[in-house]
Length: 138
Image (cartoon, rainbow, N blue to C red):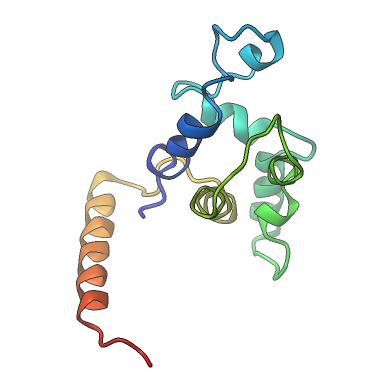
């Protein structure tokens, strides 16, 4: 948080996907679906039918989110990863990062300005400090 793609999602792709999905890959299909830092965002939001971009656009056009109609639940990308993709196994943290990104409308920047991002980071630090001070629950 803030929900920046390069900090939230790209580390998952670097660990789990970019080893096979890069321009120099020996498999032509994997090479064509480059998940390196340069092009991964555009590739992921456009993948599948309906794509994540299609679903987000539909929700924006409707002007509201509907309970139970979360992007991650509708995502062909998440479905494919859960069913299995060439032995890729996502741990709980990786999965949470991808679901969070999808369910927050696939943000790229996570803030509207540098100032807003700095304020979000400050809020995160303050919230972490408050949580550290909180007594343990029984």
